[in-house]
Length: 251
Ligand SMILES: NC(=O)c1ccc[n+]([C@@H]2O[C@H](COP(=O)([O-])OP(=O)(O)OC[C@H]3O[C@@H](n4cnc5c(N)ncnc54)[C@H](OP(=O)(O)O)[C@@H]3O)[C@@H](O)[C@H]2O)c1
Image (tube, rainbow, N blue to C red; front, side):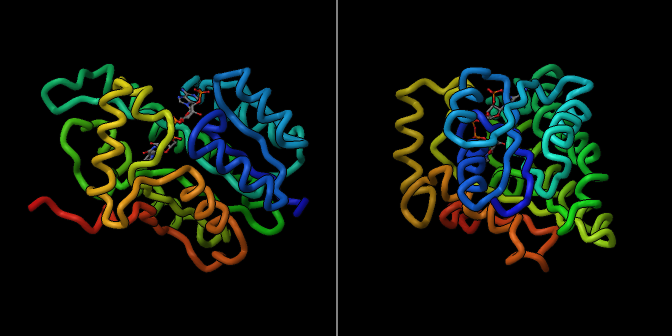
């Protein structure tokens, strides 16, 4: 154990779960948030000392309860990873107000509120704490047909920069990672059929210049690095981890 405590949302799947595993291997103690009780229990068996927090992060009282449970158990907080998120298809014409609010509440509002609740503890931590937001290449580049998602991630990027400049005086670093397509449950939860998802991954070989889509560990290693002392002079960065996807343009 390295004496540091991390709070990770989206712990039950994909990038968040890989981050729990990676940080635990690096010696962090982990509190992980999700709604799927069985998956949190499995992780608790896998990672000694893991604190499962069963919570919908869009609940009005979620941020205070999640941070409260973490600090009650571990007494401190050194790292916050905001990984919970959804991707729902919808263009400007088809996205309803409810779709828009659902995406914004989870992908953006919960990140703002959780960071706000965690901040007093991140400031007090020794060494001072850091935040990593899981954004997307869709925050940096527009993709058609996923309007609310793209806008939510662009806002997460700007939230990251705004917080970085506000909190630099306290020594709290705030960065984001911007993945390209990563093999997780995100797209299937968003309604993609298994056949469409297979075709989407196959197409990813050409849409990502390095010739492959990502795995959750491609992202969790960067998150762990951004939380570590090796990145102690980096704040306000939105880091593409996407096999070069953000470099491409339609032609
Ligand atoms: N996969 C990609 O290609 C990709 C690319 C760029 C960015 N990202 C971003 O990466 C992050 C992680 O996504 P992923 O790809 O790992 O997807 P995933 O496998 O679908 O995991 C999503 C996670 O979010 C949690 N979650 C969803 N709604 C929640 C809610 N209301 N309250 C609490 N937790 C909730 C889920 O937990 P429960 O179901 O247990 O609640 C799950 O742990 C997201 O922010 C996503 O936008 C992913």
